[in-house]
Image (cartoon, rainbow, N blue to C red; front, top):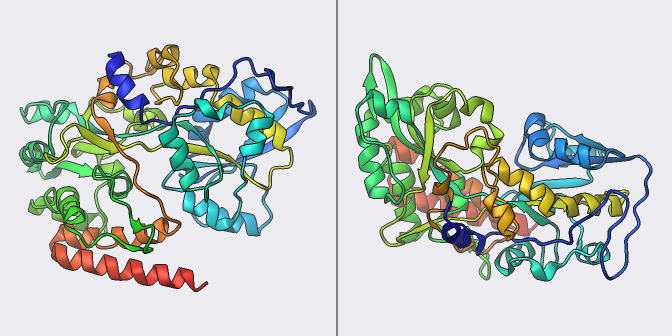
Amino acid sequence: MKMKAWSAIASAAAIVSLLAGCSQQQSSGTGGTAEVNNERTELFFYSGGGDTTEAFDARFGDALRKKFPNYDIKYIAVDPNNRLQQLVTAGQRIDFYYGSIGAYPEFTQVGLQLDITELAKKHNVDLSSIEPTLIDAAKMISDGKLYGLPVFNNIMVTYYNKALFQKFGVALPKDGMTWDEMHELARKMTRNDAGKQYLGLVVSPTHVLRLNQFSQPYVDVKAETSTINSDVWKKMYETYYTIPAQDQGYKERIVALNNKLPYKDDFLKDQNLAMFVYLSDLQSILSKEMSTLDWDIVSMPTFKELPGIGSQAYPTLMSITNQAVNKDAAMEVLKYLVSEEYQTLAAKKSTIPVLKSTSVQNAIGESAEFKDKNLKAIFYNKLAPISPKSKYDGIAEKSYTKPQVDLSLGKIDINTALRMAEEEANKAIEQEKRK
């Protein structure tokens, strides 16, 4: 991997440098120590992204239990019928909430946030070593405070099913392709063969909006109104939803999925999808499913108006909640998660680390099951600037995703879709203001 490419992403990624040598009993370093009780401590974790128990253990749980044998690390499995608000209402204590920057409206709306600025000082976390752009983003969703620290980063890449390209004798995708080039390639792969419908290209329908390459916000943070009814959003919706679905077979697949857009199952289980634009951690959190494919990755396609610009960074933040009983113990855990020791372990599994340490950067993919893949694709594009965030983003996103299916099926035109989304988002924002 070229260090130059890594530097490009590191400059926009969340960089958290902490004093080395932390122990499970106290914080070491200049400026005093923060004593942590050595007694057995329960710590409950909740994932805003809906991680399975296996995914939590792979990301955090196994490493934390090894590092902190006196702590009972417990994960609250996500139940669609028992989400965060229901858990809090039922009296379930939650010590840690973690999720992508796009998932944080849920966390703050429930009221679990805790400003960890002073706690970080107490435990000698050197915030001046953190990349300013990502700290700004963290503060943006923290009302100017600091509700969490980034523990790993994510961007969007293009996964492809190598076997399907070989089956149909079509040239493989390459790094540096534009959306126009990838659409042309997708048209060659969208076909019905022996009664099975194959799709050329699918994007993750929410992530491409949250991490859009034009850095467009969902909501104008000053006016607190929707931004969607614009030429920029129109171009993105046509690129992400309208053009890939021009083939009749693609539309029939949407109908077969009970009017849902094709998604991960088409790529991982049905294996009828040639290219899938998704987050770079898919290979880490669903390694078992990925091992059934003959796959590889290339960079996310770019707009010709934005040459070389990929998705925005998508850091996952780990937050200590205001329910945490032993906040010092919790802070030691958070400190470890952004330590060189842990970040090296994560990098070896192909997780994008948050430290600017050269040794951590060089460890990327070393012990990954898929270390033979084109991992440099993760760092091929420059990152788009992170878009301004609003407390109404979650509300707006629901309105923005609503017309995607009808737009793909050709039931509504693009101008109508954007106007409807704008009206619905603004109405929902106003209703939220009146609460």
